[in-house]
Amino acid sequence: MIFSRVRWRLMALNAAVMAGVVAVLGATIVLLINHVLMAQVTAELRDEAVRARAEASEVGQHDLRTHRDALATGTFYVLWGPRGQVVLDPEGVATGPLRPAALRALRGSSTITTVELTDDHQALVVSQPLPDGRGALQVGRSLDLVRAVEAQALLLVSVAGACTLLLVVAASWFLAERALVPIRQAFERQRRFTADASHELRTPLSVLDAGLQVLRRHPGQTIEANEDVLRSMEGETRRMGRLVAGLLALARADAGEAELRPTEIDVDELVRGTVHDLEPVAATRDVRLELEECGAGRATADPDRLRQVLLILLDNALRFSPRGETVRVDCRRVGREVELRVADRGPGIPGQERQRVFERFYRLDTGGSGAGSGLGLAIARWIVRAHGGTIQLHDNAPGLMARVRIPLSPPSRAGRGSRLRRFPGRPQRAAPRERRLRS
View 1: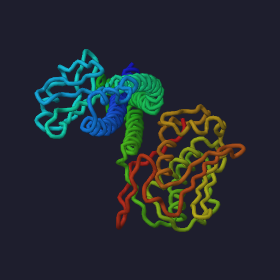
View 2: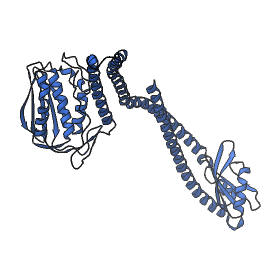
View 3: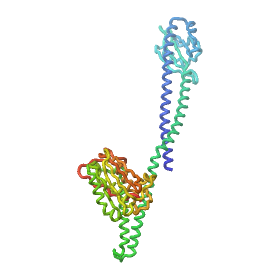
View 4: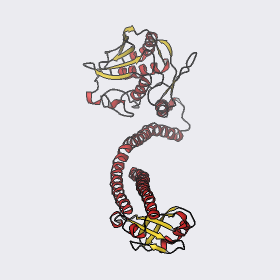
């Protein structure tokens, strides 16, 4: 409903702005046509007045009476005597509206004015005195033709403007919908994100509440007697802590507040150290962790964030690997990039699902053990993209291979949703590591 109202408002705003533009443009066109036509009529009338004045000074009234066919051109002549009387009016023009201009001409002032002869009939009149005080001569031309052209131009502009406005309304309605698509999708993602986060937090909170109720009902029991309850509460507390840390990391990334602190690091050393730290975890799950190749060398990256990506991928591989299998890790240099690969022998992920697992809270039932938050791969993808790299999942036949590629030197600006800055000295620790990937 809210998007429908926004769409209507966007369309109305665009239509109003375009209506104003069309109105200004139409008025400008009509005024320009009026200016051009009036300038042309004025120039022609001035020339005609000069010729008529010369003839009136040289010939008699009878000859002036036969001067051109005034009706054919729309031009009329009025000759005034020295005392302000009409001496000649061959066209029978109503001279009342012409008298003020004629009197000014008798006083020696030449003027050109627009006169309202009769209702809805205007004329452009040139008034000028005759030599030696012999009177005044007025030459006028009807503006009916000019007004007719202006009316036609106004009609054409109005029709064109109305058609343009209709097209603008239709285009605005379509473009408003297109413009709202990413906003609608972002809103829907935010809604799902909030719903999923609420659902994820509800479970550990429920376990904690149940545990507290048990402890409250048995206030006299020792800690040893409630060891199972406390262990469950502790596990859910840690799970909730990891979930909140993951949500905080993604929220900062979305807001552009998550910072990378790149420095020159030995990628091989970082990979060896991470694999060594997870060997006890692999042993508890009866899975072998094997480092096959280390030849990436040095690169510029955020060591904590890169380690976080590797931890996410390794934890995922360990949790979904069958007992007795091996998780293989290798790193190498490919051109101007560093490539990290983590391969397991687990159930894998169907090809059509390999992009969706990067969505937040998306879960794929693969029959593995453990319950993750569904944020691990989303965080890993953000970190890799922030370094200007790519992360992809491939079939390991059987199993899954995760491949990460990052450039030897990160871009000056990080990927969308992050800021990349260089800090001297040892970088600060990153956000708590997300150890869960798929669930």
